[in-house]
Image (cartoon, rainbow, N blue to C red; front, side, top):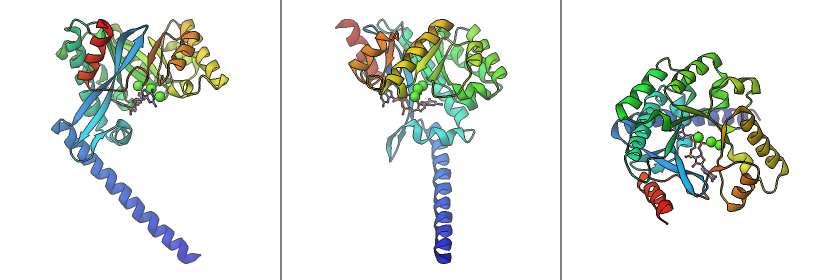
Length: 278
Ligand code: C2E
Ligand code: CA
Ligand code: CA
Ligand code: CA
């Protein structure tokens, strides 16, 4: 048993070394990726009625050897270092540039763009100033930019966060609470946040047709949004039946594979034009 114990420890140490080495390599590669222009934004349609009303920008990494990598594989590492700050700034700038391009084209002038913001970005002293500078540089309409924050972020330093949200709100930038219902925020906080929209989390949409609890939760979120004067959108809508159920529960706006996966901007443009001209 003693020998086993030693082996376990040695195995654990080797495994830890590997994990640390992998992480360090990933960090180095991420830094290179930023300067080498290997990041890209994919856009996922948001639909109301038969109209594409906006897009959520989702980060992708075109790794020279490993191909396209999704954010869950590298955002946590970026967030545990300062890398998330230049990366988040790159995302905001790229999304605002796209917003300005869409505003100048006939079929896409109405689109809004939602950008995911990390807690680390929001905690930065210069977040408001830097965001406004990016908006000014790119010529984007602040009123078409939405920033997605999560419940847990908002609770860490709530006063500061509210002040920053209000400052950007005064310039037209809107905020929405992502993954709503999965965190643990109190309704007292929710009331104080200058939000425009709640996003019903995918985990409640998935089984909405078979699990009455999920349907009840979705219905409650809709009621809460209405009571607070917020708009509402559901994510993770994969079927027409889920869409119909959400509509019946009072949610008019959807995002999910049923309407389209996150896609390169050229494909998104084709989708918007097809929806208008069909
Ligand atoms: P999220 O903000 O909740 O984004 C929605 C995720 O759900 C996306 O995954 C999207 O591809 C996926 N999704 C959309 N519709 C469906 C559906 O119908 N079914 C299923 N099963 N999944 C669906 P993705 O692109 O892998 O992003 C994962 C997470 O990474 C995002 O979750 C967000 O938290 C984070 N993320 C993405 N881009 C950024 C970014 O630019 N900055 C930061 N800080 N985080 C980002
Ligand atoms: Ca999001
Ligand atoms: Ca989400
Ligand atoms: Ca989610």
